[in-house]
Image (cartoon, rainbow, N blue to C red; front, side, top):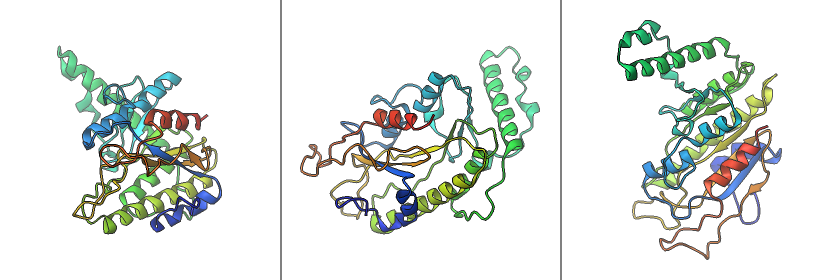
Length: 289
């Protein structure tokens, strides 16, 4: 129980310690004024912090404003458009790509007079060299840390090794799927929440065990909240006014924003968002010194 009105799902029980130690906060009512039902459009909006869904990624823009050279590292299986489009180098560092590549095939000279191909090879070569550099400085995992064996748990392990390397990237992105629950949500949703909670709890334990690391704030978002009305298949996806999590060294505990009033709904029967994604991003950026 967070307050008399707000209660965590039992599957999120592993996060209780972080909540009690004020290392976990919740952003309430997060979303766009007129949310789009399309996952593709919504993901573009969240990635760019723009209702239009166009422009460079919000994290790329933030790092450019700070003059950071990067790299911005994505550990999720499909990368992150929130990291793309800026000056700083962005890397897709999924475990499947964490392998040696033959740099001879990435030589820009192979492009000949093809300017576009040369530029692509230059970017690919720079990314490959940076991945090899990061591989060489990875730190060990904290002794005795028990990590879940899920896909998200594997990303957490790599994130902790990067953070503890002494050369931590300024931005590390992780990703988890499984929330597009149009059917059988009562069975599927707890599984996704349990995987999330176990991975984040392990991440925070590991983070606090690392020595000589930077200050870290984790932001967890989803492009949709839950619908108030369950469909005929027992699902509630594509809703508005979602909830986001903030965890780490500097968070606005206990809450950021306000929970929307259930007595005031939009014309589709969904809660009205009270905190726009750009506001959430700005608050999260201020948590990192």
